[in-house]
Length: 357
Image (tube, rainbow, N blue to C red; front, side, top):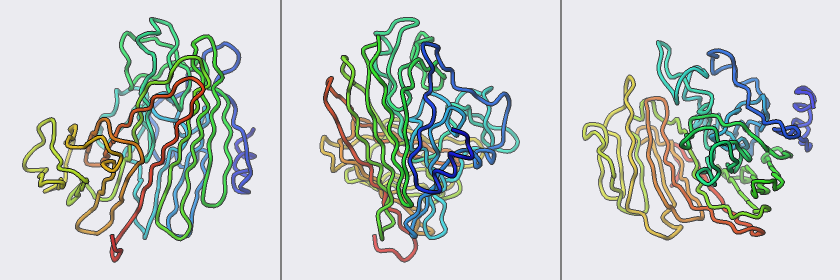
């Protein structure tokens, strides 16, 4: 389907089916730009803007030549420019993209991100499934991407792996929602799945739902993790940002005392990050209940913030921040036997000045 036809179908709210990521038995290596490109060029790639007249969000479409072309993040549901009361919660955290850097780096203009990290939040990343057992040149699974070829000694999330089977994708949209389906038919690897993701804005509320449903259609179990990398932008440098959890927060790695303060269930930024500063750590204190998967991140100076929760327990909790963005990453275990289905939901409630929270 041509890009112009695809765009018209989206505007009409019709269903459409982008091309599969692999053809026949030939591996598909997702294309990357040949050189450094400005982030603004991403605005023109295939997307759908959804709105409920309270919140609007730009959702990029899974496409081999679209916004995300690598193998770290789920290709569907890449969301940016989530806007509520004039606040953009999902601005690009990088100014350029380049295949020539590892992870991300800085130049005179700001952050330059490798194409594997050209992501906008909230977006999900699944862990690898079966990488070690695959052996060199073997096949392993990455939900949201497909069946990949192992061409490194150790798994590297920042490496772009050849996609051997990206399955078939379909997408349908309404004014306030979009649904993605990826169907990866089982092959010689023993892996196969059907994954449906719905991104939906609730009527009359500043609330975004991400609803996932994963069915194991292969002969091997799915045993992986998933987390949502939020890439939040609510405060320059994260100045006056506050994280509140339903349990006492502790950091597993040292965090600079002049930047971050812990007080019970609260973590507060005492100043904004500058230059190339990075503040990150695993956070602990959560228990086995899904009720602990409930966090608020607020700019205490402006009142803008978001409550983020999911209906599965946390298995690992990571906080990461640089001057341009931040994210809390609650990992959740996903274990599905052949023939079984598992569903989970992320709920994001946005709030701002004057809102009762």
